[in-house]
Amino acid sequence: MVVQRASMPVQETTLRGGPGTLFMTDLTGGKGPCKNCRLISDVRIPPGAGIGKHQHLNETEYYIILEGSGIVMDNGKEVRVSAGDCVITGHGAEHSILNDQKTDLRLIAVIITHGGDK
Image (cartoon, rainbow, N blue to C red; front, side, top):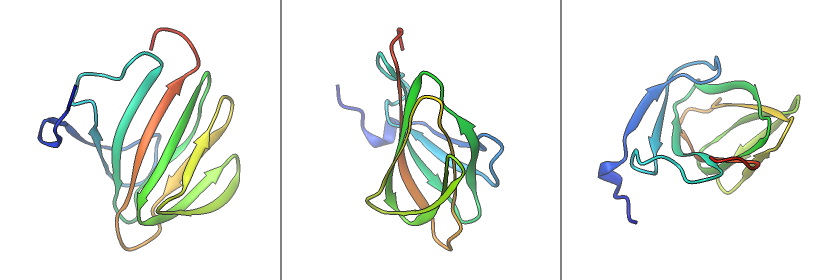
């Protein structure tokens, strides 16, 4: 299956109580993720916006940083991330991300579940 960019829905949203509005493009074209994959999205985070602190249980989330720079809180530790970095948050861990720069931060977010039917 090929999903062309023009058919991928974009959602304007806030996430996990984070500041500002971000834009999530569903890379599945609205067809939904496959088994054991809960989410696969291209996320654009404008300056000052971010995803609030949240925990992952029975799943692992990956942020693959494509453009820009920001601050990740990784289990209470502040870490600067930039293009080329990958943030991995597994079972029981928590994280958040904030774009503290003057240009957009863009990442691919993928959530893989640990078993089950998703």
